[in-house]
Length: 339
Image (cartoon, rainbow, N blue to C red; front, side):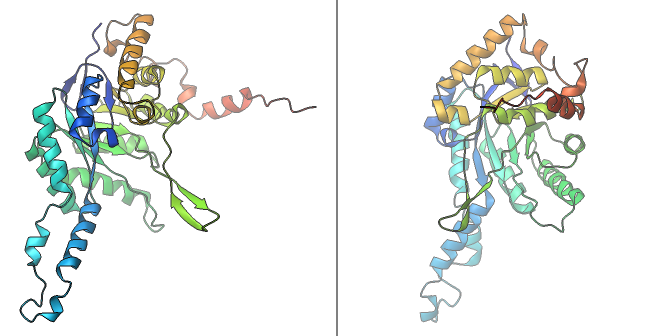
């Protein structure tokens, strides 16, 4: 059986990819994922804001006591030298270099910027370090109630525009699900140069601590039920963004989840939560299980299965559209609570 697939201009042995997680943050972890059978690995994001905070902390330390010495009124280090220090960034860049030399599979860095200069600067450094492609992790919560939906979308397209103008390697955009017209935005991004779309970024939601009376960030590993939202949009987008690959992420626990995403139209299927739950070795379970599902379906290649149950391929599109709402309500039967 031919399980090869194409993603970001790269030929992969199969569609199952290890997405960003603590497991892919070290060379040893990346090697374990490769040994377990991952077709590719996405590194944890380099966060520009984290680098900025570390630089500001260093700047503050450099100025401690400076006012007591007339010779150093501006601090112990020139501002230009502090701005050029790649705190945090150099560690990521070094991992890109080492992974390229040590691994046979593609290792794709991820970038989360906060400024136009940051997006382009670090993307260029990643390319120079040997990245085969770059994933733009657009983790943006539109908390400004005065910002319109069009402005939010323009922001995302603008980020991609600036990066694509500076790098020549393929670029994927990892999106959140909270856009008014995800399909329209997806097509705009492909037109702007995106080689891949990763659906969807999983936003971490706040929790209220009643004891401490404060809002807290939370982190819960995903479950299979969370796959339904990206499953819908991959199924809808399949066949409408032919110049870009579709990567599914969120809710991948077992091989059945991988197969569902492939049938909806995904080129690759990414997972992190399952690997954190069960270990890197779970990758072999996913790949072996996918092969078994393909054999049962009598598919000779992954390409034959891809999109077989997408929006454009099914006779009844209700499951992907508004009619699904009424059908689900009509079919639901509450449990019998009578004594």
